[in-house]
Amino acid sequence: MREIERIDRICKLLKEKWKKVPDQRLGQFLINHIFGSNPHHPRYDSYIFFKEDDEIEELLKLA
Image (cartoon, rainbow, N blue to C red; front, side, top):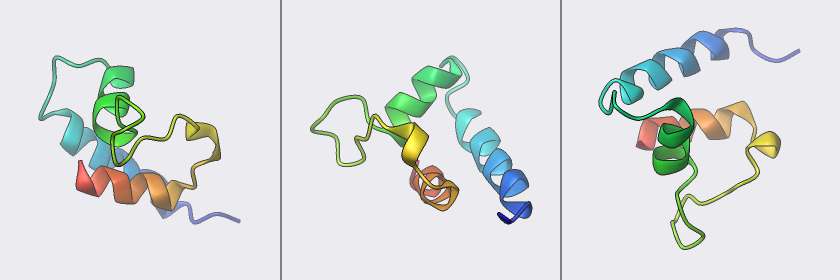
């Protein structure tokens, strides 16, 4: 079973980071700051479905 505490950690990070750019929609925030907005961006990865939660958590920390 996956660690249930990860949900609160990730949601807290998302809230903290997203509040820095409140005019962006959620999808916009995720593309611009987590997955990169173009293929040359160092964090570019359009396959969010296959990302593990710990990878998303680390990307949020860097955002």
